[in-house]
Length: 598
Image (cartoon, rainbow, N blue to C red; front, side):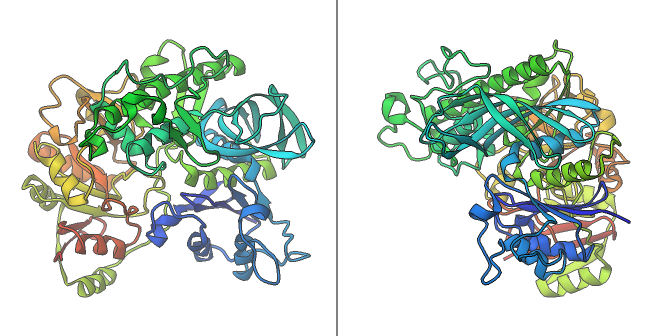
């Protein structure tokens, strides 16, 4: 009999992963279903479970705070909203009393461990050291008066082995309004095996690495969670001796500690750049767009270059204390594709094998929770090959009838089409979207929900940014035939890059060939594609190469600025209808849709 486990990620980037034994049935973030960016409370995602099973053996909930503290309660039964919804759907049995459900496991105090579990179980390694660099997970500590207090985990190192040994070796912890007198050891609890140990810890009232990045992101004019924009802006800046150091070089800590004068932490939320202390960080008369200001650009440069070095130092420390050369990386900073490429050079003489988890954001903790629960319950020691796909969204199985109905609703036309027809459109400088199969889990579009364009267009970057309503400095990605990648890009020893987790240098002479997808620093976030991973997408890129000699297509996420990636066929039609994009390619059906724009 199969074991059905649902992992539930509650916070921002909320979502659900459904596991049947150790097979991921689907994994999706709430925003894809509700169309609200970074949406929390994965109620729509939980409803998706009924399309695959009517019973769960376990529901494992991941967040930074417990269900009892922050989940909200149902009238009369006093259940948290997630447990109550699952009971009402018939997925779990009634609790006795109703607010006690043995099938529901709350991993709130193990937020970083869920990040680590996901990366480890998808890495293909028999054992590994996990480096988690994230915003603010949660731990408990006891203060001098014996009262429980929150600490916020910012960087964590784990030693990982099968079946479920995710052992904490070290944590950096931030404290909001108190500081324990004992700061070198903290408790580590395994809720499945009912054991408790200890780990090394460094505690302070300073901002963690991600909190520094979030502070600069807000300083540049965005929400703290939009750190990808800061990563895009950084190469427009330069090293500036007037910018204060991000980290305190005088502190004697095992891992980097931030400059307390520069960053004011606001745990568990972001941090603030203390510009009042530094004249060079204050706005000048006439300043308007922060992205054009030298101090903002140079701060973006400083936080990118200095945090990536800090994380490399954490990796070195992790290898030292674990004795393990296999490294897995997750947590929000794992999405920093500039830093990921930097490690390959910075650590090239360390003899490391590194796996960066492509769903490193908090949405990935749904998968991490489900996979960890399965191994903890079954003690299964099966090691799967390293994950090279994130096509994990729910099945849609669209038909000709579905397309016809959408065309009638959106005043669109549909015709038969081949890959060659699509290449002709792209080389005529038309934007073409592609919709096929299961959506990509995580933030990267990898050819199933993508916007495609001609990478050779010198004006392509500005044109597509304008159509998508994105800022001028935002870079684009490229999807390239795997067999051609080394001729065009320097992968620093990697064989491929199938999940778009690295911003890599182009080879000499390449930039002028594909100017639309090369960033101002000469890099491109690339996706390598082979026929086994995505045959329809591979064949389309191959047709583009046959016509142009270029084995690369311009690829960006199928959405408009501020919107989540499209999930359903109706989402795709809606996006075209409210934009200047006209064409939608459905390769599984051999159809091309043209939507009349508003």
